Length: 127
Image 1 (cartoon, one colour):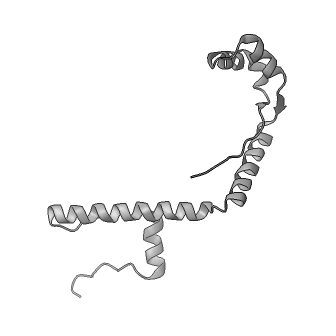
Image 2 (image 1 turned 90 degrees about the horizontal axis):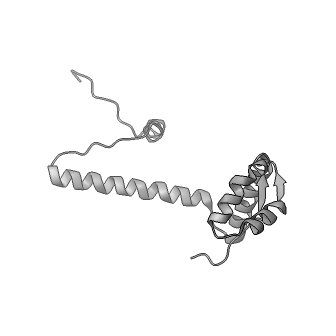
Image 3 (image 1 turned 45 degrees about the horizontal axis):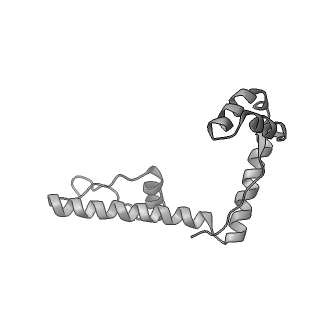
């Protein structure tokens, strides 16, 4: 469970400030009066999209530094869990139908098996 969070300030992306009608309508649809919405939008800074993306990356990096979470480890764990599910499904299929289940391997996993020497070569006729 995460207690807390990181927030950035509100800004308007450059080029979008000219679409104030859409922005005002959005704020009104979420309960703001037209006057309050216009005043709010008028007070926002205008940033180029690249600066907004940079700020997002900074917040993400800061979050991982503070939390101690490791995004690469999280991705690795997700892949391992996916593999476990596929293996379980294959085992169930084999039990149910009494035949060897066929795995669909990604190019990456098949090539990594070949590179490590774990892949077996097809048997030749007459061998």
